[in-house]
Structures are given as structure tokens and as C-alpha cells.
Length: 360
Image 1 (cartoon, rainbow, N blue to C red):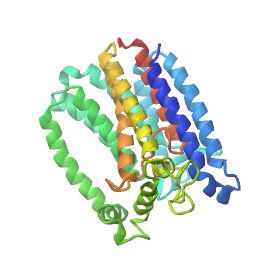
Image 2: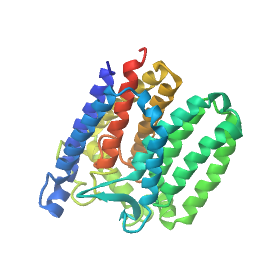
Image 3: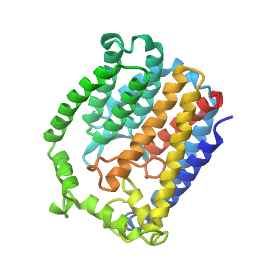
């Protein structure tokens, strides 16, 4: 039987998400599409499809993914390459990250996050005795991650790339890799990160906006300032559901990356804390599944899934509260988005499948 506590936490976050997507987007949707429920209806559709997929995958033995991990990864790489081809990839917000499918679109980088976790769990479980060897264990795993990261950066999508690398590094570390390899990689990564920031003017603007957003309040610092203006007035109890002022064209597309700011404005500290507690509950139950999984593959797969969700939550909340520069990362289960929501729920389905076999 799957972990019911985890199921309840996920469904609670989904319910809050659909409500907040409507509350945060109704004004913008009415203006742009003459339908205040435009985004909410689509989010509900994605949620229903995702939940069905979640329960289907929860019934599917998780070892199935081990047998098909290589095929899944190849498909993910094909999609990542296809999205870069003019005429196939769609550009939004300066990033060519989507492929149109009828009236909807998919984001290949979201598929890659799950595909790489599934494959890496298989690779690391089979190569554990070689993981402390740089050439036989660490380097092959790292090379695969870096190829995926570079393809995502060609879109460019730094936020998704950071989540992918962070999740995979966590899996490699837990599988037993040597500290010395991580220290060396960290120094190289720091230099590379500086080069990435310096090579794109808009990324440098995000850094300077993070340090002092009021230096350019109508430009690079606009989103952070408007987000803080939303969170501040929320106080302890909030202004009331649907009573946000920042969604009136102040905070750009508030149903996406900055939905937590609207939630904090309308539901206050208590509402925001409740959502964070639900995420902590997901983290706790996910770690328990990873610890008590019946084999190393299941442990690494569960760890990768819960790590991906947790890293994404930490980055999003940190951005919204002004702790780190803007990265363009959605909040799992709450932010509007079809690919992100559906793939995250599919990932949870695999986690629930592992929980069925875990000796909790």
C-alpha cells in the first residue's frame, strides 16, 4: 500500500495550488482572454491528468523503470535537441524551452529531470563499487549530467539546469563518491558559474538587482520589489483570499514563479507556513521511503525524486523572498504549468510505487 501521508500532503498542495492559480490569475486572465477562469481551468485539467498518472504509476512496480531507463534517457535527449531547432522549439520569455503539441506545449527539460534521475539511479546502483574511482564511476556520471546541463543552457534555462545538477550531485554524493572529487568539482563549478553569469548581461542584472533591487525599481529589480510588496502587507493572517493588490498588473504573471508571494499576501504568515509544512511533510516521507526502500536502486530513485522537489521548492521560495537572484523556477504543485505539474506528479507516482515495497 502506498504512503497515505504522502498522498494526503500532495493532494493538499494540489488543491491549494488550483485555488491560488485562480486567485492570482483571475484579473490577468479576464483582461487577456476574457475568461477569469482561463488559467485555473487549465491547471485543474493538468492536475487531474497528473493525479491519474500518479496513481497509475504508483501501481506499476518501480523496477520497470530500471529496465527502460536507457530508452527513457535517449528520448529525453532527443527532445532536448529538438527544442533547439528553429521551427520546432517555441520561445517564451527569452528562452526556447517549449515544443508545441496542439493547443498545449511541453517542456523537454522537465522530462530530462525525471529521465536522468531514473537512469542515474540505475547507473549508480550498478557501479557503486566503482563510484570512488574518478575514471570508472564519478567521471561517467558527471559527464552525462554536464551534457544534459549544457543542452538546457543552450535554451537558455539556468533555473532548471541548477535543479537538475543539484539533484544529480546529491544522488552521486549519497551513493558514496569521494569528498575530494566534490571539492575539485565545486571549485571548477564556481568558475563556470561566474563565466555563465558574466556571459549574459541579463543574468548580471539579476545579480545586481538581488543585491540592491531599488537601484533599478522599474527594470531588473521590479519583480523582487513587487514580490516583497506582496509578502509584507500579508502580515499574520493575510488580506483574505482573493484580496491581493499585487495581482492587479503589478507583479508580472503572478500565477507562475511568484505565486507564493500572492499566497503570502492573501493568506499571511499562517498560510505560507502551512504550505511550507506540507512541503516538509513531503520531504520527510520521501526520505523515509528512500531509507527503507528494499534495494539501492529504489533508495537512489526515491532520493532523486524527493531531492528534485525539495531543491526546486528551496530555490523558488528563496527567490520570492529576495534571498537569491531571480532564476525562473516554478513552485512544485502550486505554480501554473502543464509540463512541470504533470511530470512532478508522475515522479511522485514512482515515489509512491517505491513506498509500496519499502519496509516502513
